[in-house]
Image (cartoon, rainbow, N blue to C red; front, top):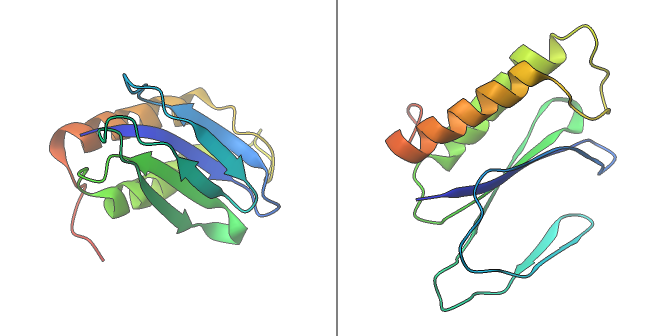
Length: 126
């Protein structure tokens, strides 16, 4: 299973964080538009991407692009929200609506993605 990318979008629709976690072997064409219309070109019927999104506080959106067979995307989105709350919002140097530049946020997000890929869900779903 694979988690391809994580995006954090502010309430104005601006991208404040992007992490490309996994580069698929086959190139897929990606077209992004506002408000996050997503079009993917399937190559050899191998690259199929699930679209997960969770509304956060004050209009912040968390978006995860993952393989549809990946288990626990809802739990992962909740974990990303928790990481955002703990490491971005509690950072005295972070301003809302601004790009997230926090090393602890990066480290914990990468760790959460690795755990999600290996173990599946973080806990019980909703």
